[in-house]
Image (cartoon, rainbow over all chains, first blue to last red; front, side, top):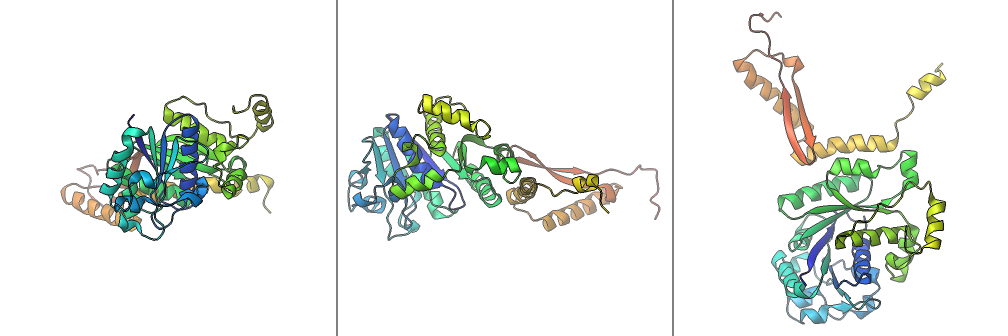
Length: 267
Length: 89
């Protein structure tokens, strides 16, 4: 096994990086993959609460890098899937506590034991972002269909390309089909035309994301959630499967719900 | 005064269309790291340099940034004046 290192980033904050990292991680583990989710947002740790593992933290990424513990001791096993681990960020330090070469070293140390290492990048274009993309074999850029998020995504894609990292894949998160129909939200085609990168998933806006995050249960575990299904589809595409695109025009909603009732897990 | 037809024509543009048009422009400048006033002075200087060697129709000069994927090309269309014609002012 040689893990693929995938960094999830966005430029702008609040577009859903951490939610995407947690859900793709859980979905990959549910498919039997060995996965590590690493929180690279030093000082603003959040992946632990989104995954519901905040009570199990003893050591963190900076402890491991500064050799106060072994890397293995900083890895928290998920309570649902025993092939899924979290490496939490330090909460009382800042981004300058680690360097890009530290990140490469940490990933190299565990690469041979895992299929995927997912790195949750901090927002912004500074040190924290550079740390997060340093070991990446693939960079997933998360954006929302709105002007500021798309602009920042373009900037971050430019920076990733100038550092010769990549390939870059795009996730359009919080996509709202009814706003698109009204002409008040950019379509996925608009976003792709503007950014000119490959897309790996479109995640519809879905209240169940908030509800499951409140419970510390990533939304992919909820099989009735469209957003959960979209994250599951992304994980399958990362494994190399061809997954048909979800019908997000909202027109045949009734039939889709019906077909999910009859064949759960499909859409 | 306005007829239904006119009101239809003048109907407000959908906000998503406005967003896309604004983003297109913003991204061009972000990617070049150049403001529109810098682009204007580039155009003026380009006209000045070329005018030293050939006679050009300065009013018809067009400078555009062409997008192809994430690649950008600066395209200048500079119509030359016919050599025999005298410029009449």
